[in-house]
Image (tube, rainbow, N blue to C red; front, side, top):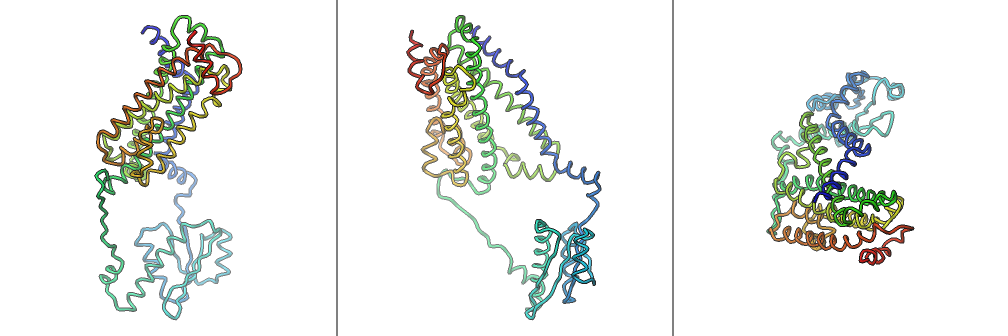
Length: 420
């Protein structure tokens, strides 16, 4: 146990003090604070550059004589920052003013014989899409009011024409949640799924690289003379796994603090859209469980693959099949965000290499019977045990192998070497 703790501390402390770990953590924490305060930073930048006080100016040529006032009232009712001004100038003059950036654009309004509005908006660039959308919405309201007046409809009658229907959705499936619960769970599950995917693929690769580095520097030969290769492998996996969990906690706490401190409409909308305002404790519990199981499953696989190579340059090639497995698991899980009750998702949720993401998706978005996640967890634990036992035999011989790697063909040679 003493040797295990020594290697565990060495793996944890060495990586925790590395520049890559510190810089990555700082960058991710800074990015979260930056994103949380983006609206405040944008407002500050506008006030410094003087852009915040300038409202957009749009000149209106009303050839009908009836549309300008109701059109302007629509913008005032919506408290828009756009300034609407009536103009008696020609379209050519206004076009020259737009070109000179004296105004943002101009609008020509006419009515045809059936009292239908025809609008022609001119701006400097076709990339200006926000103002035309606002103008079109305002003119649509004006058009509705004109037609209501023409048909002698009251305001109440007009509102009934556009009143939305009452539509309720029900599901007969015993595992289905309500639409509101699904919308809340979908964002939360997606974020946590991405964190699990990111952590597993990053830290598993880190373990494989660490093992290969020790082999290439011949440090491994000294280590295995005083501690068993099996103990060395699991100490590495546990040490870097603990470091990964610590980094996830730091980033998660920093993100939560940043968004709560910002307390803007954007951050509140983010929390609400992704379901963080009403976080389900069960979902968070399963996120931690499947994170740990997924990490140990792929980390054990990465450690034995890393033991087969002698150069760090060969690590990525060796762990490529493992990387493809976790990428496939993520893609399968993402396709199930729209409909997590599909049959292939149910099957994939019991496949150990897919279960960390797919079963978490299902348990987060559906009311599953307890036996399903428990069975999936049991299968993963059994797989980790089998992989650990088999991987230990490969690791025992793999750490003694040197020379060019021939990919997975070296597994047989490593097993034979481990028996000697």
